[in-house]
Image 1: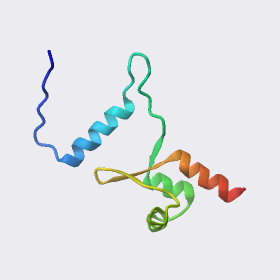
Image 2: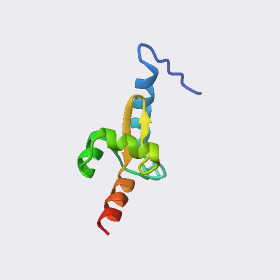
Image 3: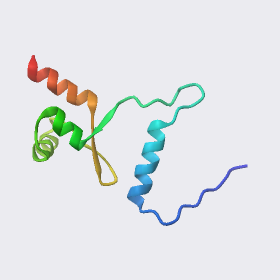
Image 4: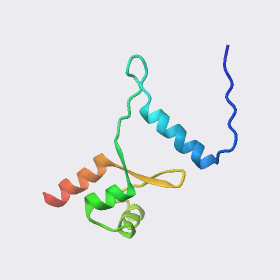
Length: 90
């Protein structure tokens, strides 16, 4: 028998954010569900790359570094940031 969950008093953005957080932290019995990528916040990305938020937005528009949004929060793949750093040093 299926259970039904009703959601009240939450914005769609908060619901998406909470679901995404639960999905990323979820592990099945067989460890099939694992986050493949690690994401970091916009603040962490700017600090790691030593650039401003405006530069991050510009890079997103130019296709240099793609941002991902969950609700009103912005995230970046750590793997892509590390690749940028490796390319800039090599």
